[in-house]
Image (cartoon, rainbow, N blue to C red):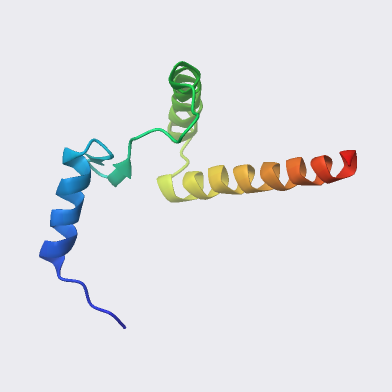
Length: 91
């Protein structure tokens, strides 16, 4: 097991924040904020608002953060697999 000094981790987070790559969010942690290469910022902003609406509704319906995050990851993973399967069927 490798140990990392907590001060080193905090310094790394600060550097990422200063570079505009990450942002601390209370109750969530530090998240990456820079866009992936080739991402359309306007399209991402549009879909962010749509996702926020769905997530807010799920929270109002009583879904906790952990199961919600698991659900989102599962849906993305399954859709990527389905896209991969349909791509291989085309060739």
